[in-house]
Structures are given as structure tokens and as C-alpha cells.
Amino acid sequence: MTTTVRKHAATGALVGLALGDALGFPTEFNDVPSILAKCGPWREMELPTPAYVTDDTQMTLALGRGLRTAMDRGLLGPKRLERPVREEFVDWYQSPENNRAPGRTCLVACEKLKREGLPWQDASQIHSKGCGANMRVAPLGLISGLSDEQRAGAAQLQAALTHGHPTALAASDLTAHAVRLLAQGAEPTGLVGLLRSYAYENRTRYHERWLGDLWTRSQDPTPTHFISRGWDECLEVLERLQGALRSPSPETDPCLATGAGWIAEEALATGLLCFLLFVDEPVTALRRAACTSGDSDSIACLAGAFAGAYLGADAWPTEWADRIEYQGDLMALGALWDD
Image 1: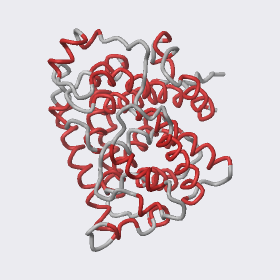
Image 2: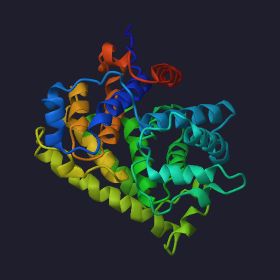
Image 3: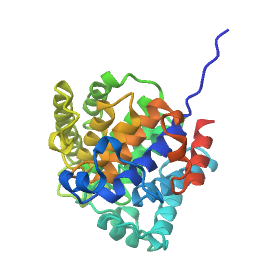
């Protein structure tokens, strides 16, 4: 009789995400020479004391709580998801703890989401593809029991509440799919190929049940034209990622290969690059992601989610995990989804 050792992928991913966020928080907006001058060698970077996180972790927790509420009420669908997640996003917007240099798109959209009776599609920032939508989507890759349609639709809807650009939707869908594959034990060496296949399969699929008439706010002639623009941009950056992995260069700033990460598809690709360069060294992956010239906290946050989903909760040093901000909230959601 064999026993299966459970890796607690949800706890690993959520804690990894927050650790990456905290490690990258002090280095965001700095170039690599400045980071090295401030922190010393990147392979020796230490978690700050106190280990504060940014809006990336705060909004991941908001989405997680919204999902928990929605699923407590029954089968996950668009209306059941939209209301509690919208409320959680507005609560985050109004919280005194929302003081971590949050993105403008989230602030503008959440101010509109506050308005009773305003359809969420009218709050969505249709021209924004900032990384704010996919830095928070990991929970949708960690919940078991969802169909592919539910996971994809929900990932795109949560993105669209703030970031309505088709690339923000596609990148969020891809990020959730990557987290799911890794949590299920997919081989990292084949991950980029699996993501490219997924992007091709979904390239012309507009999730109308989840997105409604969102596409009409754009200049696109059809919903298919709208969504395929997003998938095409994701496919282009996945190709760059594949090229970077063919001749890996761990000592080079990852942003030079796959982009600075301020926009959704680049945050996904650069976060993945950091994880894939150091699959068996999760802390090194976080340090590499935090020592980048781009959106360091979001890149490291995604790298941490990927590494934690793949390796589980034991990936992270106890001394780090025990002092991360919001540790109790992260562990509670992780335990719920690991069960």
C-alpha cells in the first residue's frame, strides 16, 4: 500500500505569492545596479523586516474571499461571482491599508464599482492591460472542482472588473491555467508548450456568459476580433519566453528577455521565466524576480505563485513564511483549498 504525501499547493502558492511581493516591494521602480547597491548580491537578498506586501497580495486575498463567499452560495457562475468580488474590491479600495502604491486602473475602476446600479462593464477600464488583473488571479488556479469553462470565465471576469483590455483577460486566464497545471504536477519543462496550445485553442472564444457585452466598449467589430487580439499578444510573449529558455542566462535581468512586467502578458512571461530558471530553487527564483528593472513585486509575486503551486508549502523557509504580512489570511484560504 502506498501513501500519497500531499504538497499543499494552495498554501504554497499563496505564501509564495506574498513572499515574492514583499521581497520585490522595496526594489520596484529601481534599476538593477541600484538594487544591487541597496541590497547586495541578488542571490543573498533577505526578506525585509517587517515583511510588508503590496496591493498585489491585498487584491489576491480580496479575490480569494469573494470566491469563497460565491462558492459557499452554490455553483460558481457569473452573477454569483461578480457581486461578492465586486464588494471585496470596493472594500479594498476604501480600506486604510490600501496605501501601497496601488495601480491607477484599479483605483479608477473600483471607484466606479462603488456606484450602485452601474453595470460592472461600465466600470471596467477597457483600454488597460496593466498587470493588476493577473497578479491576483492565482486563487482560480488553486480551487478544485471547477470546470475549464468556469475557471476561464471566472479568471476573465475578475480581470475585467478593473482591466477590460482583451490582453488583460487572456493573460489572467493563462496565469490561472498555469497555476492549475503546476498544482496538478505538470512538468515545468513542458509548461510553455501547454500554455501556447491553450492560447491557440481559446484564441477565438469570447466568454459571453461571463463577460456580457464588454467587447462593445472597444473599437472591435466583433467579440471574436476583440478577444483574439489579447490571445495574440500573449502568444507573442510566450514565443519570446520560449526563446529565452532555449539559451538561459540566470545572471541577466529577466526583463530584458520577456519585458518589464508593467503590462499583463509581460508580467506573466517574466514571472514564469524566473520560476523556470530555478525550478528546484524557489527562493532563488524569488530573489531573481525581485532583482529586476521592471515591476519587481508583481513579477516576484507571480514567480512565487508558480513555484509554490508546483512545489507546495514546504518550498518556503519557515522563518520567512511565519512573518509575512497577512499570514493568517493566506493560511486560512490555503487550508480551505488544500482540503
